[in-house]
Length: 155
Image 1 (cartoon, rainbow, N blue to C red):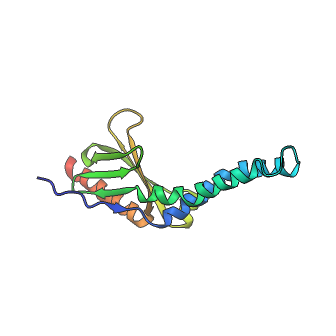
Image 2 (cartoon, rainbow, N blue to C red):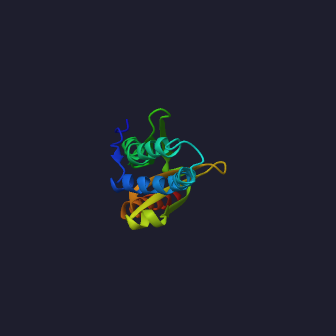
Image 3 (cartoon, one colour):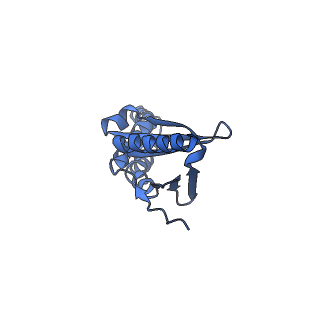
């Protein structure tokens, strides 16, 4: 019988990365609301105040909750990724089915030395599973562990 997977959390710096990404995403609607407010096209505070409260919630509360719901485990023969609360997902990827492995970083993630590990499995074009928020060295080490497993299984 298999041992239960010891799930690990993502790197805590990923919360900051998500907050920065959300703030960048919300900058455009906030600027638009500010333009409407300064042009006095509506009643004062009609757009900017609700949008500012929504933005504060999306930047400070949501990323921490999302972070707390992500966990992963790399077992001897599988990668398990658990995420979500309302829409819960527990994905198990057998290492033997992995066809391709990516480790990638965007500019914000690179600044915090984080990366996303993406594994592509045999199947249709959407057969990929991503695990964001890993320390770059951890993602590279996981990629190499998976690669060695595939190499040993084939030869």
